[in-house]
Every structure is written in C-alpha cells, then in structure tokens.
Length: 394
Image (tube, rainbow, N blue to C red; front, side, top):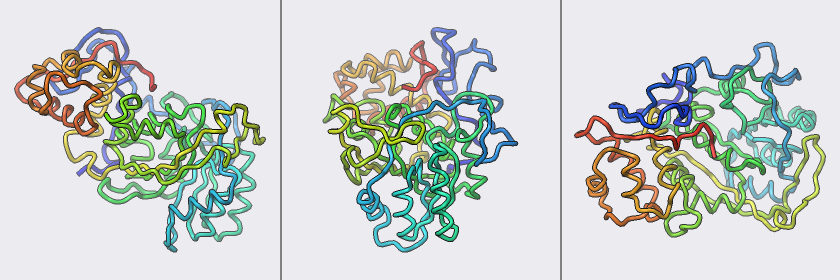
C-alpha cells in the first residue's frame, strides 16, 4: 500500500527533460533521454527549493524568490459564507480542521469559526493579516494565521524561498500536521478560490502534486474545496459527450479525484482586491455575468493500487497530452508515436476498434490503455518520447 511521505523523491516531471535528443527508449517502461546531463534534470534533491532558515512566518525580508503581485477574489458576502459553511459542515458540531487559502477580509473565516470549526488561515496579502490575527484572539486558539500563499507552495523554480512563498514541509511542520497513509481519510479540508489570472496553471500544478504525492499530498489525501470559473468547471467534468470541452485535464482530474459540484455563485458575490489590498472595480461585463462553481476534489483512495504510481505518472501525463494534441484523430495514429508495441494488438487488448477516435475514449479507457502498455510483457520497450515534451505546464 502506498504511504505518502515515505521514501519519496522530489517531484518527477516528464517535462524535466530537455530537447537534446529526438528519440530515446528504455527497457524499464518509461522513456528517458540518454544524452541529458543529470544536473539538467529537475526532481533531484539539490534542485528542491529551501526556505531561508532565518526568516519567520510573520516577518518581512528581501525576497530571493520574488512573488508577483496579483489581483485576487475574496468572499465578501456573509450570505455566501453561511451557505458554504452549511455545505461543508452540515450538522457537524465537532472541531473540524479547515485550511483556508487567502481568506482576505475573513468573512468565511468568521462563519467557519462560529460553526465550531478550527481554521488555519493562509493569507498571502499582508494587508489582511492584522485583521485576521485580531479575530484569532477571540476564539481560544481555533484560528492560526500564517503569511503564506497556498497556490504557490513548493514552486518548481530553484532557489531560497521567503514567505509567502514556502515549502509544504516547512508549513506543515510549523503547524504540527503529520503525514497520513493514503488509505486513510483526508487529514484536512482546504478551501479557496483559484487565482483568476492563472487558474489553469494552478490546476495543472495541483494535478502534478497529486499524482506525484508531493507538496500537500505528501501528507495524505487532502480534500480541496475550490471556487473555479464555470468554464473551467465544465472542462474538468467533461467526457466524450462534451467533445468541445473534453481534454487531457478532464481525464486527469476524473481519474485522480471524485468531483462534486457543490454550489454555483455569481461573480458579483465576490470582491476583487488589487495587490495593495484595495477593492477593485469590475472592468468587463463578461466577468460580471460569469459564475463561479464551488467544487470538491477528493483524491481517490485506490488511485495508486494498480499500475499507476507516483513514479510513473509522468508517462501517463505524456500519453494524454500527446493524444489530445490531435483530439479528432484516430487513436491508432497516436499509438504509433507512443509505443513500439503493435497498435492493433493494443486496441484488441482494450477492446476498441481501429476507427476509435481520441474524443471517443472515456477517462477509464485512457487508464486502461496506459495499464495495457505499461504491463506489456512480451516487449522490452514500451514507450516512445519525442520532442513534444516541454518544460512547461499549460
């Protein structure tokens, strides 16, 4: 049984490989480039970012890793906050632990505390921290405020980090949260709003962290409760019945998590604040008419009980991204560039005909395809990589 946090290397990224070679194959399942120096590969311990040891959570210092100021959405409506508490807490009166990401003015924070919950508030804007700490003094230790940006934990970039950018290890050790086996329930529930300007990148990063069992997922099956735009919500929940929205992101989300749409709310119910903590005006009519969807992403307990593991997930990512580059093409055409194994034999194993298209494949079909190639025993070489691989999350 897989236990996160035990014997894990740093994040294994298929995109860590440079474009030095056109093709390369290996006997051990996943293909790697042979002529790339080890020092140029990400995922090694010496590339893992570290926090400055002398910097405290609440202190300011010159940043070695600089964080760009961004506009953020915050919950500013007590009605919305009360609705979310009813959804998340139900009739529970136990002291549940919530990790609130960028609580801002603390409207939801206050509602959670009033319901009897315990809250860890990770706020990346110093403007709101005094107000949150003042609230914490009134609730007998049930509110911990940390100067931190949840969506930028464990950045891929190298270098020394200073708050609000930090590693999950530093954060969780500070909070006294220990890793739990993947087979157990969620160690905590995280609540937040995905950053408006890089929502898609944030989703990709969370998926890489989840599949590699790194960052917050090193500590167990952390449940995410997030507001995302209705457009992105429709994409991650799409399947072959929604061919225009169906993509690699859809498959990865559905294979990894149970996805529930908990609530839909108009953008008008949220406040948008600039980098200096000032309430910003809505500029575009389209943004006013757009809804935000509150979804729950619960990692599947059995995600790593089969062929897929935190050590070969990068191959699964590559397979999907390669297929969806030409979503309207026949699957058999992609198989020739993915694996040296006979394409017709693979199709026979997954019980698909030679005319099946990429957009006809459901998420579980792609998982079956990956498992079929990965477990193939009659050939030493299973996968082919080419210059498609890039060191970019898109």
